[in-house]
Image (cartoon, rainbow, N blue to C red; front, side, top):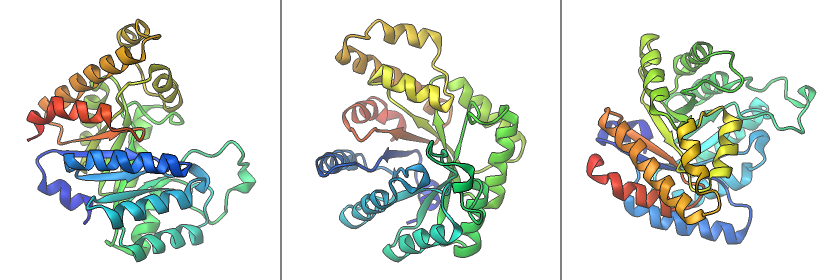
Length: 292
């Protein structure tokens, strides 16, 4: 089923993101996580894709297995960087063949090993071109999601310019968006307001990253340009040598963040699970009365 149709049917969407595991043992662990999380009855789940196709087959295999062995609606991420249009079409043809109807269309980060001359001349240069390519070749078969950035993409000179490119993706046919993680809800509220002012009216689902390993999340945040407020840094630095307390405080912080979003009318939450279920389940249990 198309996710955009499901979003119209539910009061509040809850969804989860996974990444392709590198080993059989990690794959088993991932599917144990999926088994635990499916009882929440998520609106959908998604599987990430390594830029340049570095996890192409693994992404496809996990997406196929979720689709065939569970009752979950699954969305495959697809990053166009490093792919020719012929390769992109072969990937999409394959997904269509196995019954996948939902794609998250991304440019993707350019791998460090890539030089400009390594990039195919007939590829899609950005996510807007990828969305357009999918619509031209598959019409309405695919529900297409795109990424959005409440603080702006790291490569964008400012937020206004980033919103301009976001609108291009919408104009090309994107159905809904999932945001990059953020830790100050004011960034999200201001972003939504600016998007509405320029006529962006697709659903925008906030991406939530529970902080269970502060150093790891701090690194992620620095790479994607997400601000961790100073008062939040001070809280987590107190527990730098205490993983259990860090996890507890992280769950409390994410719970408050989600509660604030839901009380302010947000209609969905997308959790970056890092292939683990415990923190996400506990956050969900804390907020489920606001979702029901």
